Image 1 (cartoon, rainbow, N blue to C red):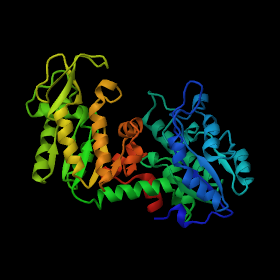
Image 2 (image 1 turned 90 degrees about the vertical axis):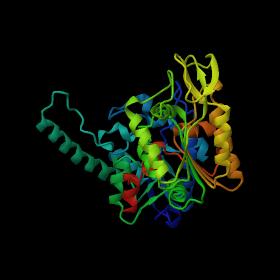
Image 3 (image 1 turned 45 degrees about the vertical axis):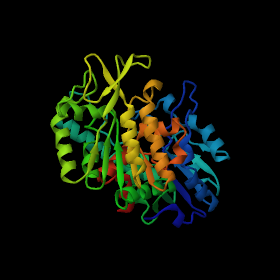
Image 4 (image 1 turned 90 degrees about the horizontal axis):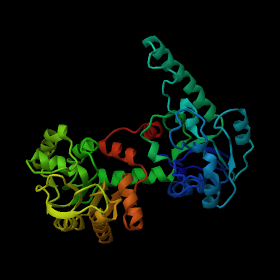
Length: 419
């Protein structure tokens, strides 16, 4: 696996795919700079070698339109602050003007390109086709996009001498800047530190876990996690199910779930997953009690009941105290822990206790020597919110990409470099 630490960037211009898709407030100020900080080790390695860095990223979903609110110029001041040096900004990502700016870069300098998604070719969708387009027009449109995308990638590649992908969060997308550009730099395409660390963390958990291995799957829907759960059943000793998806399993087994979230069309699937777990000797653990609420509101009236004793007009919004004890004991006795998805509506203070307790149990297991990997937007948000991110082994930056990797899929952005 070629990574930046095995490459000398002296005198080289490196075009780096970073993930600066950061949140902005109404004044276009960056409100969370974690993704920018995550790219620093790679950028600093390039500069320390005596190279220059050309950074490219997307921001939001402009769908090929140039929109002020999605301009990466809003990121420049935060990037300069985190990097500790000035950053040049190009108001496009391709074209003669940008090529000259890239060519004029001196060793140690950084250039940030404008939003890649201001160009339709980045995502390669067939654009400009109305709903009444004929099949022939659709085919022609796709062909046109394919050709223009090739030209776009070629123009991006003109800017640099080598390519670095350090955006794990977009590695599952077959986009120009993640899966196509690498071919223009044979032998000079590589992963940055961030992706390198992500892949090492995934490999450690999925292929070399120390037993017992516990996976915790939370979140709202079973349908979002089916393939992940099925793949994990061949690897884990314990599989904990939590969050809204719990109730599909409970109803499938005849429990009363009241107004709790449920995927009615996935009841048979839930039963099938329970059978598969049993057949494979996996300890599948569901919550045993819950916090019921009479409305989806922090100030709702609440009560604690057994998980299968829901009540009409009430919904489960968190796990109960017996479940917290049960799950914490399993987690603390594990040597490898994977967590994706909260246990309840942790955004509301009165329904965050279960998610906090699970996060704390994972940190205690980690302190005792377990390897813990936390991934997925909500889980990452939870450990950051509760100040526990530095007490787990690794926090993944790629929600969708991480899930697809766990499913066993080839990620286009990884395959392009690995081959």
